[in-house]
Structures are given as structure tokens and as C-alpha cells.
Length: 361
Ligand SMILES: Nc1ncnc2c1ncn2[C@@H]1O[C@H](COP(=O)(O)OP(=O)(O)OP(=O)(O)O)[C@@H](O)[C@H]1O
Image (tube, rainbow, N blue to C red; front, side):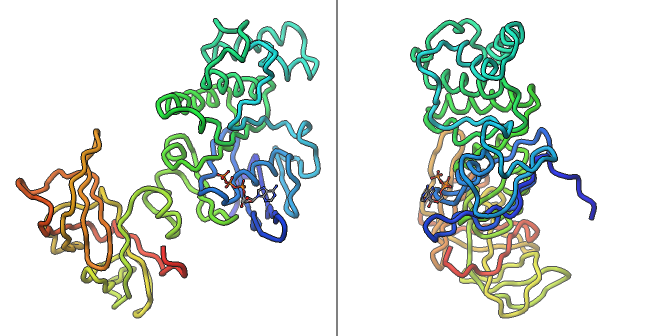
């Protein structure tokens, strides 16, 4: 199958620290102008991969090609890559404008070019009125805006951002996420963004690489990551789900099997031989109250209805220790109180099915 060559092409990147494998031969292709997030739990190797691409860490093996050029052996300052970390790392003795101008001056840009570029970027980050202020006198959000502008001002081919907003409070963080996305689009920069926050990854990314133990388990657009997680790990790490262990009983149709579980028989799309241990899963918002004989129905005991502002969750206790959380209680029969046993149904087509993972998930 013919494939467009990637703008950034990481091939078989591997790294071990003291004999412990941290990156296990990772492949990652990023298209020009694309925003790709590396999403995964602490210690899965996100920062290590980013540092290898930046040239701040040498891989044990593998190669990195950027815009057709193998940069694997180049030092960081010759890679044409901008980096923004969680800690702002601005020059504290310089003003906002001087910080943004720094990289341009180091590259010997003309005075006019520096003036025009700094002015454009301060405008883009809505900080023109603060250009002469010392960066020490800025808030955390403002400092991070300056850090992003400083990195972008030299027009890097690639921007690498490592949890740039994790020190900011939730509201500011959300504003910054939207601003960064807009800024990168306006400048047309390709970016890799490290986060352990699934919401951040879902809202910002063109594609998300879900990482686990030094590997990319799934690389796909946010919709696919959420609706069709490729592995039980990706399922569990992104979004809520009810997961029910079972054993395949029989094939019930073309590409469909019936699974025996502690909650009864559940049908799911998939191809498994009878007797296979599997994990059945469903997203909470795809479940509805009431029976549906043509689809999947289970019964569970309502334990709690939890108000969460914009949404309400219904919690269930089901057989065999299967916590069920339903995002919306629309359709909950009036007067239902915790303790009641209710029928819950969802479409066979919405059922996710995986081979039972080795480790209990
Ligand atoms: N210089 C180092 N020496 C030894 N071990 C290291 C070094 N750098 C990272 N590690 C280990 O490698 C593993 C992966 O680290 P890495 O920073 O890439 O994870 P991460 O996914 O970015 O996690 P976090 O979200 O916590 O930053 C961790 O177990 C970490 O302790």
C-alpha cells in the first residue's frame, strides 16, 4: 500500500535505562501541520520519546527523519525543533519582548525582522501591551504563552510540548489549550504534545498515540480512540467503560459472537472461537434504561445517583463486581431509588470485545 512519507518519521526508537526498557522500538509518523499527542500514564516513556526527538537524549537505536533529513545524529540546536516544557524556563532577567526575540537574535536575524516577528507573536498571544514587562512579573499562564511564542518565533519545523499546562489551574488550562491549538494552526506548525490528561488529548489532537510501557498501543484520531479502543489498556485509559469478563459461547452470525458472563449472555461484534476467554465492554453513555430483546440487556442494582453539575451519573452494582456508571439518567423511571434492580440495554454493534488480557485489568 502506497503511503505518503511522514514529515516526522521516528523508526524503531529504543531506549533502556540501567537495563530497564523504557522505549521499546517505537514507530511514529507525523504528517505536516499535524498535532499529535502522546498520551499515557506516568512512566510510559512519553517524555523519553520527546527528548529523543529533540536531541536532548540519545536513543540506543532507531532513527529520526524530519522533513526528509535524518537528524538522528544532530545536536538539539541543529534540529530545527522548538521545545516547551512544563517549567517555563524563560530568561528571568529579560522582558517579554526580549525573550521572544532571543532565538531570532541568536540566529542573526535583521533588526527589522526581529521587530516584525516579535510584534506578530506578541499580538498572536494577546500580550503586545506587556512587551516591556519583566517575565518575572507575569502569571503562570502568561509565562507559558511567552515560552510558546519564543519557541515558535524562530519558525521551527516541529514543536515539541511536554505537559506545558500542567502547572496551571483547570480554567486557565482550558483557555490555553484552545489558544495553543489556534496559534499552531495559524503558524502552520507540526507539533507533538505530551500529556497524561485524556480530555486534553481528546480535545486538542488530530491524532493521539496511546502509550503503555514504552510502546504505542494505538495511534488514531480522537473519535476512533474513544469509540474503537484497540486494546483493553486504551479502553481503560481513555474514558469510562463497564468491563465484563466472559467466555465465548458460540458464533451467532457473520463476525458476531455470544459471550457468557456473570450478567448473562452478551452479543458482540468479533471473531473468536468458542471457549476463548474475553473481555466485553461498553461506554456508559451508550447504555439506556429498559429491556431491548433485539440487542443486549443486563440487570443491575442502582447504588447511587451522583450529581456532577453538567451531568448526572447513575452508579450500579452488578454481578461479579462490575461497576457500571451511566452518564445520563434520562429515562430513569420516576421514583427509582438506590437499591432498585433495573434493566440496562445497549446495541450489539456498540459492544467492544477483546481477548482477555494476561493481567487483570
Ligand atoms: N535519566 C534517566 N535515568 C533513569 N531512568 C529514567 C531516566 N529518565 C527516565 N527514566 C525512567 O524511564 C521511565 C519513563 O520515563 P518518562 O519520563 O519517559 O515517562 P513519562 O511517560 O513521560 O512519565 P511522566 O508523565 O511521569 O513524565 C520512567 O520509569 C523513568 O523513571
